[in-house]
Length: 87
Image 1 (cartoon, one colour):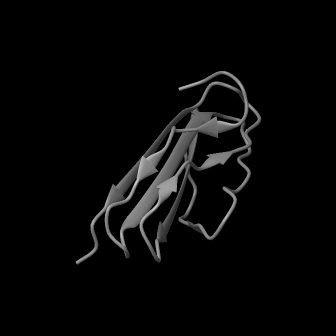
Image 2 (cartoon, rainbow, N blue to C red):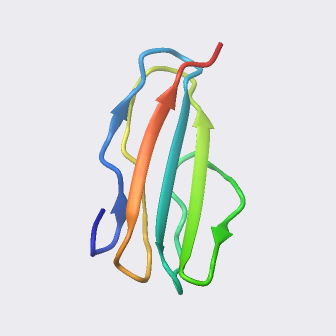
């Protein structure tokens, strides 16, 4: 979690090509998130009267370390990044 922009979740290292990497960030409303740099695909934004959450994913072409981050406007965010082995 954090109180300044950008919102990030640290880094994760994949161990297999074609791993699925997911990055999500949530914050209080109103808030606007930027997009993480690179080839991330966005899922639909989820929001309520108090919070907003955006999630992005990618299937990586090779192993590597990923440290996504996004700009945000409210400065009270929580974020997570995870990798899953694709079968």
